[in-house]
Length: 253
Image (cartoon, rainbow, N blue to C red):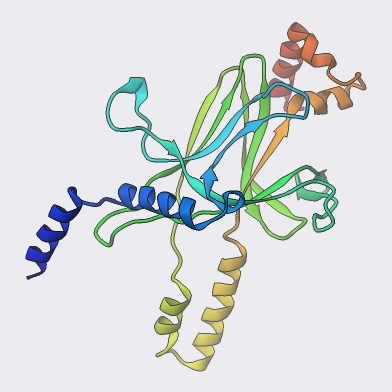
């Protein structure tokens, strides 16, 4: 009976529905249901400063890339709901920070974006592979740090990479799924009170440590401040900038 119903549904729709088809339908549904400012948008941002040409692009993509234009539709930016907190807003903290070592802390400011993403998969299939992509333009550079957001003022980086001069970086993200609230309640129902308290405490730690964060630091403005140069000096001096960046990478300034 189930097979007959399945064949009837496929015949009515005209195709077998895949997770990508369901995601496309949800984007269509969201355009009708939500006002434009609240609709999910592609996770793809230009790395830039006001009144400056973009240094590169940062995106979160799903699927496998089609190198050379062969095979499949290729990877595309995922659609996410985003909330932008501009620097200087009342609800935004003055700065955030992270530790380089036990005695050195770095503070940073700027616009902050909070994203929420809904992914679809069927019970007999795997979730789409996610990749963080960073692409730099010629004679441009920036640093990408990834880690966890511990609080409104604390960022905990785990890895960093220097992207420069037409680099095309693709980092696969190994994401794991934690049980939903209902699944968690069902799982601990048969445990002892002490085990339930421990499971709730451990889950609380998991929920507070799952906010993935990406920080982009542009290098040229920091070098200008370090060398006490006027703003945009290194933008015009390409050879000098390349020599400084070589020293920056070689000696990890």
